[in-house]
Image (cartoon, rainbow, N blue to C red):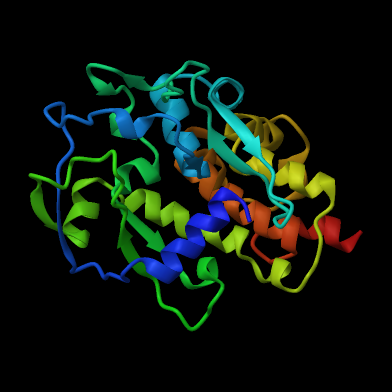
Length: 264
């Protein structure tokens, strides 16, 4: 059992299952003695929306972000690779985006898991038990002193304060891919389809090239206003990427082939 599986097992068996109205106390700021310590030697998995926000914050393209700041993690039990934030190759192994005095330098666009901390969330398919309902839990780590003299929040208030809504919106679309019935039925993706998954959802700038610099638009029936949106708005592009992946990987009718090609 790897580290991630061990953590999931511990959460399911030992953590109290909380709801959005559960109250807790927490604060994180430079005055807390552990400030920045939680941002070192930690596994932070990135969603496609995390990558979108980070690469736009840094004003670099998705390929550069992926090359410099992430690594792929392969799980033999999963067909789809996970993207993990890379830590520095220093003794502390801290996050590249953390300044030891000022804190997070990408704070406005920090990943979902950083926003949620110390709140965690589990959903039925993630627990492996469809009878479970989505629940929240609080991560009490020994290094963290933020619980000692923090403000009182409900989980719902905390999530609103941390700006989680757009992350959750795209997170639900991401789960439609990663927990698709295709995998539950024991079906297997080809290597080419795994590559397409990574291209469309994580390497968003290259996916845009795939749409606009190939014969893609001659083959698929995309409305003109939709074309303009995905050309000029990365969030619209990512929404389309999710539709494309459901079509190209699982055969769902989320993208239409042009009628003249169907006739041929």
